[in-house]
Length: 91
Image 1 (cartoon, rainbow, N blue to C red):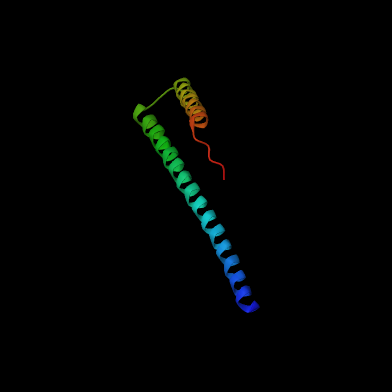
Image 2: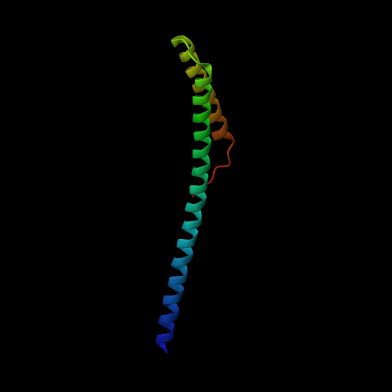
């Protein structure tokens, strides 16, 4: 009589562990997808900056510094707006 109870207990424990692992897997997949999207956006920005600099041709040091400062300022503004406007998700 106790044998089936021990089997049922083991199955319940296994089921609970499987659910926990499945939940963690779903969270990791979502995080991975989010990171891939962010990586793609950053890659596009880098390509755009590189292309923009290549199209400008020869530039002076001062103009180059101004362009870099402007890109940094634009990136900081975008970073602040994305951090404050996003829907935070706690894991």
